[in-house]
Image (tube, rainbow, N blue to C red; front, side, top):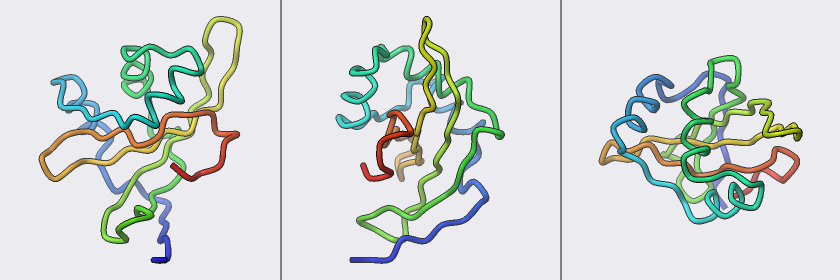
Length: 114
């Protein structure tokens, strides 16, 4: 197994990732969509939550489990939905074809593995 590298600075510009979402250049993995839906998030709420991220929500950058050359940025925002508070774990990257890839969207209580 390839070691995971981490750093405390975002690898991707958050505003650029948000711009890709606004222009509908998005890939949502099935696992992130499934976990988001299980928490009651719609597809639009997933996107809106990411558009609401701030630099303060940044947690770490890490290399992908399958390829140590690909970086992924992790955000851990606190979120209120109706009367329920969530601490979310959101993992993003930019694809080579310039799309925002939503790799993980789940409760931060779950482990860090996709």
